[in-house]
Image 1 (cartoon, rainbow, N blue to C red):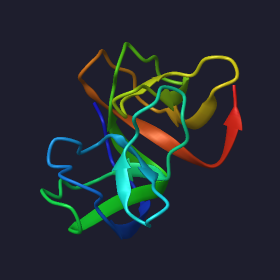
Image 2 (tube, rainbow, N blue to C red; image 1 turned 120 degrees about the horizontal axis):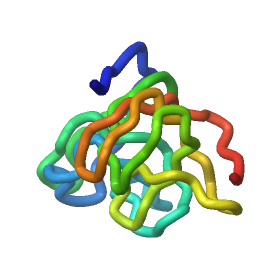
Image 3 (cartoon, rainbow, N blue to C red; image 1 turned 180 degrees about the vertical axis):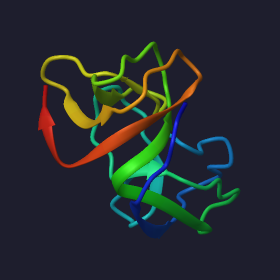
Image 4 (cartoon, rainbow, N blue to C red; image 1 turned 120 degrees about the vertical axis):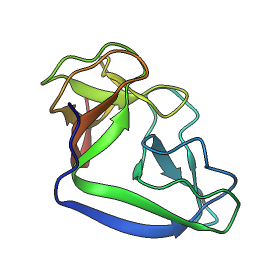
Length: 123
């Protein structure tokens, strides 16, 4: 079961329609807007908590605490996680940016809980 506990959230403008990106990792673009992470193992500013349907709308991004995220593969509780090319959580590979640690495990497509790591490190 996934849970969301005390999360620190920042509101930033969405870079596009993120209505289908709720609970995925997002990155901060150079224009100050957030977009769904589009490269596996890439950096992220946090996890999108709402689903803004157009560019410029408020995107609520959890950057600290325990947040919900969609699994992109089977993830075991305790695993270090990174983003896949669709912003979903997968087990971190060596050399990739660790975005958090799974608090609950799950299979692809399931919503799991992740303790976000504010200082990103490589696996």
